Image 1 (cartoon, rainbow, N blue to C red):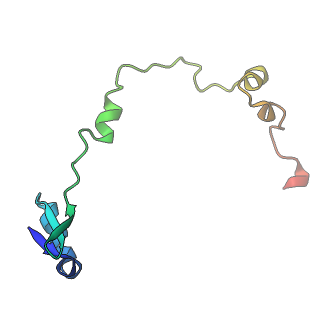
Image 2 (image 1 turned 90 degrees about the vertical axis):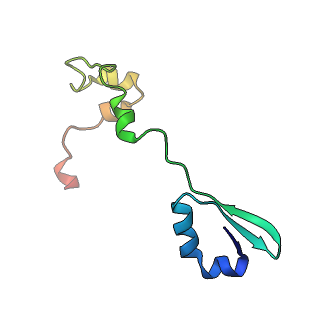
Length: 93
């Protein structure tokens, strides 16, 4: 289907419905085609399918969520956490 610029501006909702139905719409300036409105193709996979593709491929050790030692924090560049107090002082409350 083809529309002039004026028709496209006036009937934009209709054009979107046509595109959603799988049609391509041409917008013309006079007799010269200047734009094509086409549907966006659905992605080949969904996020849930992507997450499921890792099933059985990842593992963790029992200490994966155990607190890190001060030495491990410093090794990871998180020295500011190792030097921080565990509880805020009563002055900061």
